[in-house]
Image (cartoon, rainbow, N blue to C red; front, side, top):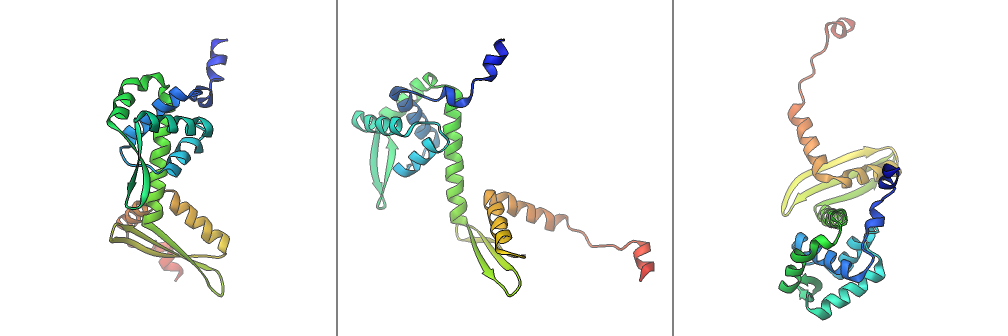
Length: 198
């Protein structure tokens, strides 16, 4: 009987349902991620995975700004949320009041979000139509260094877009697998039977 109830507890049931918990969660997240976050980025990270209700998030952010635990700073013409020293102290002191699984989920969502942003900056694609089929041109950069410039053929546009989406899921892993394949590639040695056929 007990197992049935334990198995029915989903991560959503454990989500913060009051403003106080959301404020602690946001302070914890901003402290852990340790970088300025724009209002839109914070909204997408916190609400995108259903971790925090949008209205609770808005109220919590407004209260944090009023209380001085969060401030809105302009950096190179863009507004960012930055946790104040008071906010950092609260994040460390009260983090255990929010379920660890929820804390882990928002942190993981933030890491995925910023990894995706980096991928979009570092990897560019161009799809070119041919007489028969399409070419997918992929360029991988690391800051100013060009790591890879690769062109793949696809029989139709849908498959070219599918290849693009697969590469974008994890460009670093794709690049590493290409490098591994090149390093492990060996000269082809035909079998005796293949030689005899010729």
